Each structure stands twice: as structure tokens, then as C-alpha cells.
Length: 153
Image (cartoon, rainbow, N blue to C red; front, side, top):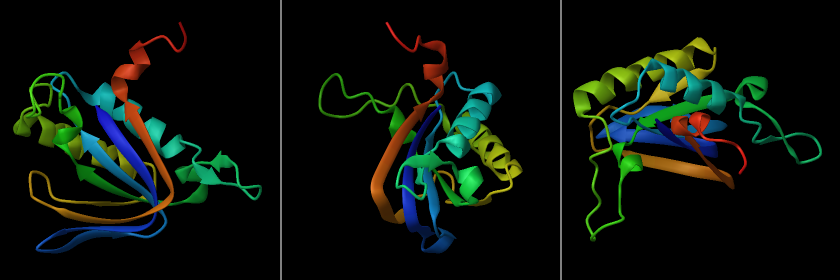
């Protein structure tokens, strides 16, 4: 599972009309891979809400979303699994099929909500317009496959 996380001052997502809106917090673009399951969802949720990417009084990244009680806007984005190594058209064969991805996306949103943070979402498998006022800008990629990779070496 891949999550592209952006720190924002405010953000919204629309499908014909606004369906999700947040103030200070994180926009989480979430891609589900073919081999992803609940363990991946739990890893990503724990990592995202505990990322220390909000400024303390000294202006250092020392505060997490949980500590700052921020808001989350979670948007499904299968294109995070684009493979562009060959040719000019991205391949999405590593992305989970829609039925599988939707179930895992919904489980992940549920886990985000269990943290106590306010969580808004877009609409799964819909063309969405996402309006973001990025703060910093701060953008971080979280990939559940990283938990199996050595940290150094």
C-alpha cells in the first residue's frame, strides 16, 4: 500500500460537488497494491498519523497529526502504482483490482477514524477534483513494502 501524504492548510475533494473538506491536516492519497491486506493498512495508518511533520515552537518537525489533533482527507489513487519503466503509457498491473482495492481502502479509512482524528474522503473509483493548499510544501511517501526492507545497507 502506498500513501502520498501532503501537509495542508486546507483541502477539499469534489465529485460534481464537494464531498470532503478539511482544515489543517494531511491529505492522504492512498493506492492499494495487488498483494495488500489489513496488515498493510494498519502499517500505513500507524505511520501516517504518527509522522512528525508538523512544526513545534522552534519550527522543527516534532509534532504528529495525533499530537496536533489535525484532520485527514483520504483519497483513493490507484495511479500511485503506475509503472513507467517501459514505453510511454503507465502500466497499472501492480494496482489491486477495483473490488479488492475498495474493500481495503474502506478498511484503511475505518482504521484512520479509529485514531480519533476527523477523517473525510473522496469517492472511490470516481473522477475527483482535489483542491489542496499545501503547507511547506511538505510531501512524504509511505509504502507498506518498506517495512520488509533493511533500513541501511
